[in-house]
Amino acid sequence: APEPSAVDAAELGGLRANPSSLWNSMIVPLLGVPIKGALWYQGEANAKHGNLYACQLKEMITDWRKRFATLPAAAPFAFTTVQIAPAGGDGTLRLAQQASLALPRTGLAVTIDLYDGSSPCGAVHTRHKNETGLRAAAASLAAAYDRADVAWEGPRPTTFTPAAGAVTIAFKASGALTFTNVSTQTTVKHDQNFEVTADASLAGGWAPAPAALVARAAAV
Image (tube, rainbow, N blue to C red; front, side):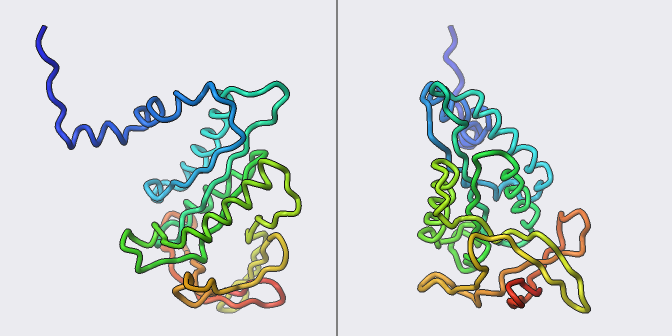
C-alpha cells in the first residue's frame, strides 16, 4: 500500500484549528466525566459575527449539557463566560456573550474596564489576568454553588434615556455601581472605556465615549 502523503505545517495548523478537530480531540474524551461547571474564555475570532455568536454560544452550552455525563438528580452544570476585553469594533460580540445569561446556571465575567491597549498581543488579550480570574471565580461560585453572598453580576445596562448630546444608562449590578482604579492594572482613566455606535445593526462604527456617574447611573 502506498505511504500516506505528508501533511505540511500550514495544513496541520489549519486542521488543529478546525472546530471538529478541537471538539473530537479535546472535549469528546471528557464526555463520560460528570463536571460541576465550565469556564469559557473565547470570542475574539468571532468579533465580526456577533449577532450569529449569540445563537452559537447558547446552543453550544445547551448541547454540552446534553452530552456530558451527569450524576443522578444533578442540576445542569454551570457555565461561566468571560467577556472579551475592549479592542474596538467588538461591542456586538460582548452583547452576544451577555445573551448567554438567558440560560439557567450561567455566569458572566465583565472585563470592559480592563482595557490594555499596550498589550504585546493586542488589546483583546489583556494582561490583567488577576482581576479577570477573580471575576470569573465569583461568577462561577454563584452559578455552580448558588452563592448568594458573592457579588458578581454586572454592571449590565437595563434602560437608556437620551438627552441633548448624551445618553443616561441605568445598570444592574451586585451592589452599588462605582468606578474604581485597579492598582498596577488600570492603564487609562477608569470611566473612559464606554463605546457607542450609530449603526443600528451594531455591526460597526463603535467609538469611545467619555462617561460620568450621575445618581448611580452612568451618563455617556
